[in-house]
Image (cartoon, rainbow, N blue to C red):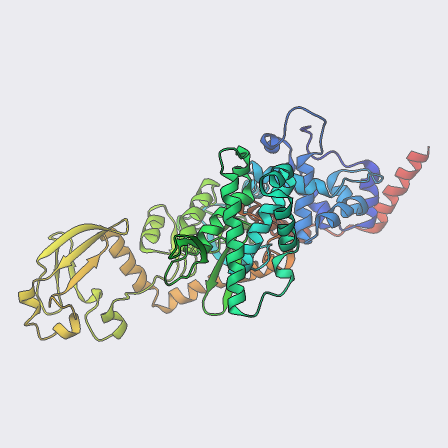
Length: 576
């Protein structure tokens, strides 16, 4: 790698671009304002120090950002480098430069994903904006998520079984054809070629349940034969490490059950969820081509196979500082995306909250107020965030006990807690007889017990408990958590809090912009690392579009005549 970064803009390229774009363009302003973001040095670990010199990774990163800003394919992006004047200006290329082959972009992304540099450009742009005062700590930020559809076909269980076998046969035919024919014979391989030459979803499956079950059994038997063959002592050891082979093993386990019939013969049959059990959604593979895509559902209407992306952005529209009095950004600064996280589709939003806030703190853009919907908080997260100086503006779920749901009995709020004496008094005046610190689901809790002699004769017992033992028991969180949650639940009922929380809804517009401009809703690539890279570059592109609007609003209009005169002088000098 030649650590040269973006080269200087050739004089002729600059002059012609100034005439054609008298007011500038997005690509040109990105070059003028952000050239330092696209340096080569941060990419060094992904590129070797020996061998023929390659293209500048900083330049390829800029091409990728511009590509996502216009939702272009690799081929279209390479054509833009060759044909567009504004892109040549941004990249510092001569007008006669023919660019590069479009496959370079795929190899560049593979290097970044393979070395854990998916977020590098996004983080460098965020750091640049922080040093320029466009974003900072202590302000307001908001987060929301949306679903992402994977770049693989939707397959039912029967199609998945057949496609998994086909993927292994294709891999073995390309990697070890002589072993495949020598192990199974030309006749068996020819039979498999007829069965698996075409994609399983390219022809109509049998309409009869009996025939479909028979086809599933054939797929299962072929899969079992292949899996046993690659694990035989005399088989090539590296065959077990081929990715489609490992995926076939996992898909076989989740799809089939091997038993014996009455005669002791081996039977391979499809698993039934009720009798044999199936893996949970977070472990169940959905495709032999993407080991990270998962089926997931949201509500009763949304059902998809793929991933989930979380976007966090600033929302200091009034330029106010955070709760600690700091100024988060300069007045008039655009709302910028400060974090982007891609997760499995089956991961609940609450599992992403702590990681998002940790990354924001690491990059010195920790918010003073963090606006989230009801899927992100928990009692522990709200308490821990407050301890770290972050106020989570988010609705906390209420008490789900029977008494609270029916609104007729005594819920937890009706009991008076004395934390110093470790006693709880019920609405009828009886005091607890037991205070037991315990661990529940890995969290600290306190179990409160009341005496049966107090509860059984109590006139309000039916409103308080329906337990067979006849006495009430309460489960509380530690004091700090309990009091923090109680205060938050009381506050969120006020009109003032509701009006304040309305600020969170603005993140929906950012998500729509990302979907419309960059095509974030559909994964371009396969596998979580590359989809993470896609979303990081998409977020970078959105930030650049917003920054460009901010820069353009500050620039005075430049007349075409002055640039024409400059070009005329340059052409005269070149001719001389």
